[in-house]
Image (cartoon, rainbow, N blue to C red; front, side, top):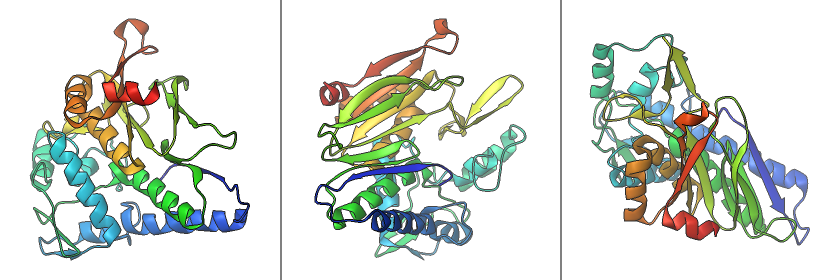
Length: 308
């Protein structure tokens, strides 16, 4: 997934060896990559993307679940969370083919947008997925890390481990208690381009949490910063002042998907959606008076209640 991961498992019964745990985690991640990675030419999602056809594609239960979840979140978020934006993601240089060297032309953007779903859903039926356009490509990285964390969590439960924290690239899921018997203490990072500092620490158990931000993956041209987070309506990187969105949900995949959706729509619309769907969300907005080093928090009522 192009990132780091960490797993803390509290084996109170002392029934699982470190090697068994390590093997389980590595094998689980290998399976997720084989299904979901756009950077693996032989993965299931790459095969789906390379099949330039609208015919049904036989999909694994895992990929079908991820796509179905993505479409549900998309429909609930003004279709601003859209896994079918692959052609646009690649055009802007944030996909598997490589980095961007320049801002795309309006004509190229229009062509890529035509091949993207943008509200036209993928069709899921009887273990198959069908495209709305032959050249549609999907990127499930907007919820793939969360899905991977949930898959590891499920594997740990099969081993009999009930207390754990699984983290992939900052997206994580928790269960039970930490080694000291308390809720897991999770740090939310300030979305700073220059410093790595904590904005807030929250105690969580049996929940997933994910943060999406525009401050790690971007490029600059002509003094303008272009984020990897694309607005499906404009087919261009977001331009609002919301720097990050953190979501707490019942699992890491939902937290991952919703945090991306919330970052795309921004704080104002995001707080409305949080009220509509009873979501726990924390937005961090750039403080224009703090020279890029200060951020103004805005939390939904559900978030405030969870971390109280």
